[in-house]
Amino acid sequence: MNLVDLTTFCIEANKSPLFSKRNIQVSSKFLEDIGFIRKEYFIPNDLLGLSNLIKEKKKSSEKTKIEKGLSRKETLAKKEVLSILAIDFGYISKGFKHPKELSLITILRFIPKFNKWLSGIRKKYEIKPNLIKAEIYSHFRENAVYIVEILENESSSNYDLVFAIANEITKNPANKNKQELIKEIDTFLNDKYPKLKEEIYKFFVIELGFPSSYIPNLKKFILLNKIEFDDSFDTSSRRSARASVIQTKQRCIQLGEDKLKNFEPHISIDIYGATDITDIRNLIKELSGAGVIKKFPSYKSKMGISRIDPKTILSEAVYFFLITDKNLTNKEANKVMKSLKFKEIPANISSREIARFKKLLNL
Image (cartoon, rainbow, N blue to C red; front, side, top):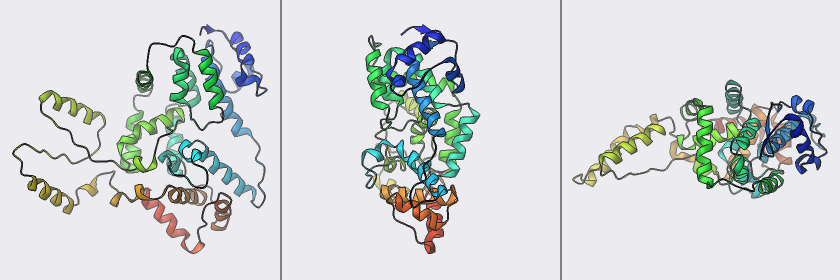
């Protein structure tokens, strides 16, 4: 787990199954070409970060084989759809044809407005997920196994190999549990990008109108390209009501601090021991009739988005992406939809479906 120089790092990298099994020759020129060169390295933690970076670079340079029955334009569009889906563990693990769960981030990645914002944020703050991962692996090097679980996507084809290597190198783990490590990594990232949460709030809550409770998941994706395996589109697209019992001034202060830290416009109702419960029912009716809730940024009529079947919302998102981002015609988009096993959209209702999806996502 020692800090080493460039030459030693290259020697150790070429011994690792992460690279030797893939016929990759690690040299100082190679590291410079892919943007991973530094003065000092941690062995073997930086190997994991380098592996991720190589994989990302390789994807962008691979030649696309034209699929039978599709044009080059249609093939490239389909490839991009599959690359978006590949990161979603919940979707892939359930099988391509009949997903039971779906990440909200996967739906967002089919929206040009979101992708443009994501690229802008990463450029503004010079965010390169694989380099951030490499830095975290080095900073918390005694806990490589936990780090893999926290940073990497379980759907990655490289996950088992990375996990096995991490398990092999964690000989003397630090005396920390996983939750402690997650908190330390959060603190590390918050210190590194202190204004990022505010940027996400403005776009995600104010512009798109989603609950602020999902901001930590979105922040993790922006910084690390990470989607949690238990992330659910259904639960992330709505926010349940909560109640807190306050019996002391100290509890009131604690709750106030928590609400400020995770603030989102909401209605607060004070109920005391002498409060008549019928007053509460009447008050809620008054607020509902006055349309107060509709003025909140995260308001969605009846929250219909959380009640739509995952396969249906995914199909609509893919069609929207093909038409608005890849500029395919209805006929071209349907050829791609059919090859992906999605229901085709008739030309006479195409505009209506696009408008419906935009309204649903508050675009």
